[in-house]
Each structure stands twice: as structure tokens, then as C-alpha cells.
Amino acid sequence: GAVVSQHPSRVICKSGTSVKIECRSLDFQATTMFWYRQFPKQSLMLMATSNEGSKATYEQGVEKDKFLINHASLTLSTLTVTSAHPEDSSFYICSARLGTAASYEQYFGPGTRLTVT
Amino acid sequence: GNSVTQMEGPVTLSEEAFLTINCTYTATGYPSLFWYVQYPGEGLQLLLKATKADDKGSNKGFEATYRKETTSFHLEKGSVQVSDSAVYFCALSDQANAGKSTFGDGTTLTVKP
Image (cartoon, rainbow over all chains, first blue to last red; front, side, top):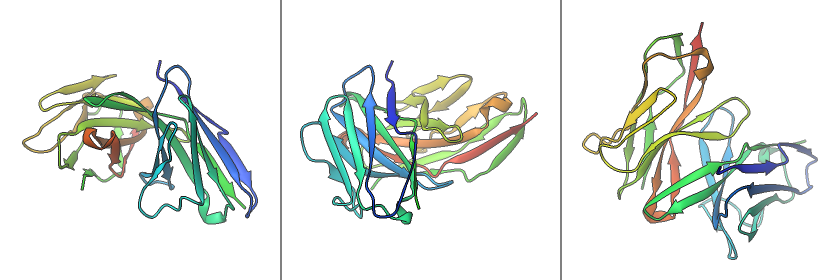
């Protein structure tokens, strides 16, 4: 149980185009999902918290107009990288939160490798 | 704010050697603590967790004990295998902040036959 999928696993796009990444919780409902960015050989950087039915909460320094997040259902959150540039190339990982306030757990998707040419 | 400090890598061990990866944390509240493992090109997998002081998390031969007095959560395994080669992340989850996680920088483990 507690499986999270991401699609696509890899995407190459041209500079200036937009790319959408999907994150799905396959066997549970998640009111909260998180989006992370990971640079090579580095740790995960939290970009935003995605809340079902409401606006995402972005971390300081993350451009909300560039990284659009939509959490329209309890099993799906999407991250759209708008007007992508080579510096947006990275590994994007989502996670879905499970549990109660006493003990939350996160289950991570397999990641999406974005390359902007 | 919250922070996690992990032992710097990379760590290279021979098969069947003993493994310790140190992790210490700073938190304003009472966090839950986690170890995640990441294999090349993949996302993170939860390895083990502990939710309160003196709890011991264990899985697949790995163990870590939540030590509040030393604010530590060191990962140990008595006998590593080649298949344990991966990047290991220590993390804390701030239950008072919607479960947001703070990650250490990761430690790369390579086990040689």
C-alpha cells in the first residue's frame, strides 16, 4: 500500500515551453502533497505544499507563477513548469502525506527528470 | 528553524562490515525522525522511522534510535551487503507544521564485494 506514482518519469523540452508533471496517490487519498526539487548529488529542496481544493503554499524563493501547482482531487497533484529554461533542469519529486497530526508519514513518487534544452 | 546534519560521505565499506551513519537534528518542537534510502535515478523510499524519544526504528537489518538527550538518530547496520549501496537521507517531520520534512544532505554508501 501507500504507492505514489509520477508521470512522466523523464521529459525533455525546449526552452520557453511548459511542462506538466503529475503526481498520483494510487491506493490512498492525500489531502496534502509536497513537491521537491533535487539537484545532482544534493538533498531535496521543498518547493511547495499542495493542498487539495485550495491554493498551494510556496516556500520562500520559489516563484509561484513559474511553478504552477494544482491539487484538484484527493489523488492527483500537478506541477507545471511554465516557460522552462535550462536552469529549471532538475529531478522533481513529489510526496503524499498520510497519517494524522500525531504521526505524519510521507510516501514519495519515483521522480521526474526534466531536461530543458 | 529546523535542521538536520548528516555525516558527510561518501562512505565505502567492504561487504559484511558494520555501518554507522551519524545524524543529529535541531527542532523547535517534538519531531518524528526518519531515514530514507534513494537508489540511482529513483525517488526516496522510507527505510525506518521513530516518532518519540527512545523509540527504535528498524527495517531490513537497519536500526536507529531516537535520542532526545543528544538530538541524534544514527543509522546502523551490523553487516552491509552490496545491495545496500545507495544514498541515505536523515529527515525530520514537523508535526506542528503540517508534517513538512527537513532533510539532511544525504550520505552516499558504496559497499564493495
